[in-house]
Length: 369
Image (cartoon, rainbow, N blue to C red; front, side, top):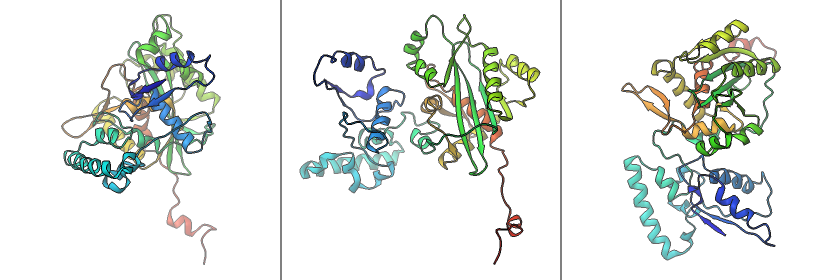
């Protein structure tokens, strides 16, 4: 069985249906054929991430034949001699001449117009978000990925909370300054509000919340109404802080409809609470600096699915003074985790990393002739 243009599939229903129908076959086979796409929240992008690990030798799978023709980097659009990587038909000299000529015209036109996303996806097989207003490109975000586990016990932390509007997600994000590296390690947890059944919400949002729960990255609301219970959120957070003996530098949240959470934290704990209004004035500097730190690989993460999802969905909305705020193109697109994270970063960006001055170095035992 062959599934063509698999990047268009919104869920795994077709795949699972075909796979289960092949259980009696002695040599079952299922083939995906597809270019890259512009929606990074589809199952086939997860498949692409998986095969990348197989090809890199991080995972072994002897039952999976993989052929992936793609450029190594978007900078290679300026290097026609490398285009055979994503266009294997260049092996045919006659086809190469026609394809190379047409591709060069498309590249020149795309660069002149400043519109190369579609070109990168369809002609060079690189996954890219569709919107030119994308806040952070996913491939830039992935540069900060680390598989090293961070021991958070006793660490300083900045915490951001993005409370949900009725049935949306509530997100708590964490920023741990890494003094020895002058970088930040980030993580996130979400609370899921739903009516009727969680399966209905999974189908509506196209997010596998059951998988997130299994990974310890999500918690279902305990409220019968389906609305996020703020008391449950505060209890989870305070328990998490106490269990890991975290040194809380700040808990940051938008004052809009968060009075209960703010009051409860202030009454029951001595954690510093900072209200950060989500407007251009308060968040634009943090959003710009956070993006710069991502590009400079100062933001490290372990591939938290909540943050990955939010990065894929978040776009930057700009005012007349070039200030930015986060937004999303569709209501079901979830950006809560990155909103909570950048709310916390409004304070974390001012963290004073330890720095040995020149005079301290001269006076240290390490200095000498």
